[in-house]
Length: 112
Length: 110
Image 1 (cartoon, each protein chain N blue to C red):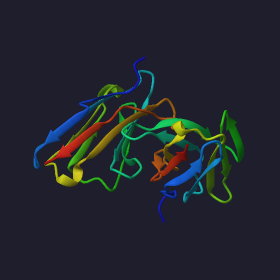
Image 2: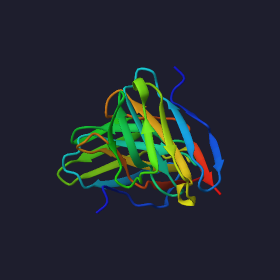
Image 3: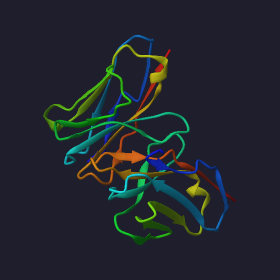
Image 4: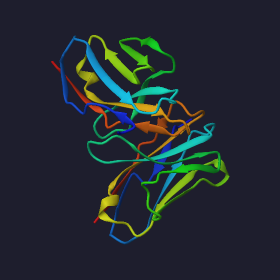
């Protein structure tokens, strides 16, 4: 098992462009979480899945953010019409139960 | 009131001393509590979990939970320079999402 894998590691994009990130969880984990983290802050909850079902999406997220987890395997997080305020580290984590999380290395997004 | 609150620090502790990190949470229905350690530029990693009132010890780490006071703490005994990191408190909310505090920066003084 190679742990939680996130791609790409870094993404630089121009304001207004769309970006998509991918997360491959630990294979037997049925829960998958997305968080956003900025400097000096803790991980901010974005959304989470149990298998392929998206159970909750943060009310702080605008409609520009969408996430999918087809067939309960990997997940994608898309940000449309990126803004400078979207610059952050996007973290994916998976778990077998709603308990201990294993995090991936994250995708660092820079919007210029 | 924020869901999970921590003092952001930095907390400076001499090498070999006990570091004490604190966390309060707002949801009385929370059932699971965690401490994660995050080194600069790295992702969080789980170091302790606690689910019932009282103390839980694992090596140099002790987690303490008081549900009546909505309070969780982490003690690190015999602090080492390698313990210098940000410590994140996390709580499972009623709907099973896991919420993190802002973290406390810990600096162990050699």
